[in-house]
Length: 377
Ligand SMILES: *Cc1c(COP(=O)(O)O)cnc(C)c1O
Image (cartoon, rainbow, N blue to C red):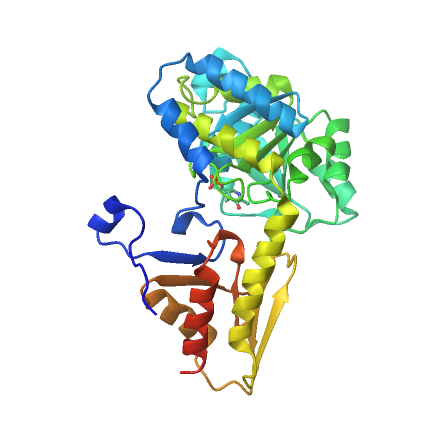
């Protein structure tokens, strides 16, 4: 079989980059997602314009508010910026002196409470704004008592993280009830939680004061975008703490063409047929799973809605009877090929998976063929 091994971009080809088939889902290290043609068109149209930028992001925010059910919205430079300006908004608010003072938080409430099982690398975005991270959930008493006990006069916000491997026995609603009793806002990281599209409105409906999502993962907008939605006063504070205002978020610029692209992506996302897309993904995973059939020591299965994978993934488990290459060797061999095929390795030893969500038509067959070859030596 012959492959077209161009990346698709003459610029990337001229740099000598290999074409990548992305079986790991919408991860930043492989380029995030592919932008559908209507998103690319919206960016191209916007790139040759001048507009009032402040007005642009306010009006874009109104569209985001409609889609999320929140009072207000804002386009931010990735969910990472969403986290940074959540912290800035909860600490400095709309006060011009405080906005200029950050990340020095003297005189401000500056602690963000995080549940012990929600600790994650993106905390650095809160700390960049000047916030201090304070963990709760390892002490005595019920979780509700522990959260209530952790709130004090320095608490700026309570954060709640949604994502694979971030459990919490208190629901968002329960956390919101406790925080609001103490007049403390709750900020949510839902970066990778779209699709399902229901999540656009769910966390707001559960009472979150601010929610951020990535624009460049499952929404398939520009990789550098994100959405912030929530309470009007806090969203306005977030806007003032971000580019183009002189503020702790000045370096987090989102450009006019990115805003146009994100809006086009959101319009597409809220109107598209998600069930049909899921069925297409499932068909691709079935083709990939077939590569593991009738091999001793290999269990190849479709995992629909596995908490640690996006979409209906094709998973391969290797047991003691397996005498072929290890999971990480398989991963390395596939990645070393041309095109370079990237698959995930799971938490268990002896497990690989292919998430179909970032594949394009025709690529599942290439993945299946390459896996077939690697598994059979
Ligand atoms: C991807 C991700 C982020 C960062 O989002 P960007 O849009 O890439 O800035 C933050 N938190 C979680 C849980 C994520 O999965």
